[in-house]
Image (cartoon, rainbow, N blue to C red; front, side, top):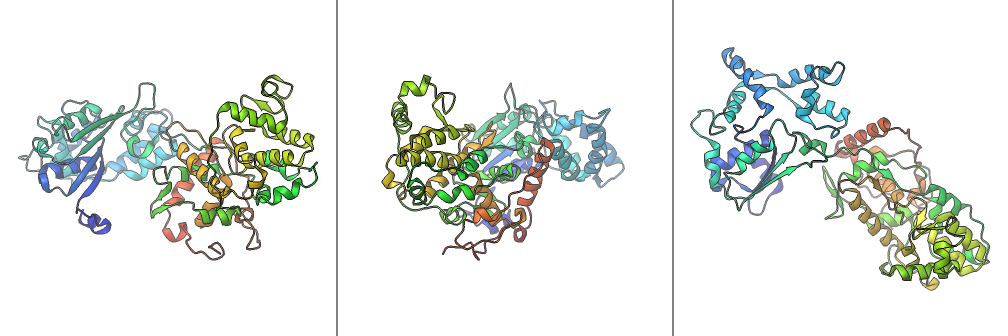
Length: 504
């Protein structure tokens, strides 16, 4: 604790401590021993208790090891080696010890590779004296010190700091009733008790509270390479349309969008995203995508008029009718429904066709930019359709070059990263080229090959995004590799050197 205090330098000299399993027991023990002088501002315990007498904890399996260890004067019990030796019998036919897996993780909560890594690398030897002391948690009165005279539970009522106690609904090592047994003796106004898990799933076992989460695997990435390619090959029908689009500073976006995304890599970074601060929480601290990153990666305007407006559904439909020269009724039930309009959204390629058919410069430009923005900066999860809200910023052709498109794209990406962190979220949208190129710029460990380019070119266009092997196993393996890469030594992981990628 003294080392941690010296490193983080809390103003009040107190720490917020979080402990899982044995770590939580240690927090309870210190709080019980030290009372008002524990040095904590608050504590959080996960799957921890000092009294297992009322529960059917599988921790009882360790009790038979205590007497032989004491009788033989064995200094340590090699729990890690024992579990490593038993793991093949729990993970391979005939699965004689498969029940051991449920002590660690609930069904479908951990990928098999992660479970294997946890079993083989996480457990170590247990001092025999500690094992003997832990057996007292199953006696009346609960855990006591090695002398046997100090019962930790008897002194927890003196606790004067907030305590959050978390339990897993399928934790067989420290069941919810064991956690609750300790919580009951804490002052009610300071104790909060929560059980993770729902009747319909997901469920949480002992290590799911810290290492498993719900293993949703690799997120689906939403981007529109086909629409971007169509935009790149688009043939203008009205004179002056091309020049008007170029004046917006957005026309080059079709040439810098990545055709292939590494969703395993992006998913690993989503796990680090904190929506409250709009930053990635990394082992070395916080980092985020900033406006100057957007400028150098995409070379689009980052200052100018803000993008913020609201409109009713009726107004949006009316605006779209004006854009494509069709009434609202025609949009809903006319011949165009299957071609470009369906359920309140525009089909991207059909809208381009309609814009060309009108042969009116302003209308063609508006349709083109509609598809361009919806396929590059403001991609949503509707696959090949575009939401009418984009049109709010395209109606006044005189203001097209005045908007801070980069700021809008960054705010939208922030929002989508936050959505992707929610439980049950399966996909990620927004300008994923911006996110992937930013990772390449700042994290050399993940960089692919790079093409030479002029200093004024978008940095995104210099990165060669390779086509990666598909399949769930390959994607999951890349996810674990990316997660391990984030934990790599700092000098391998992050580049803060501005060189050619600095403010100009």
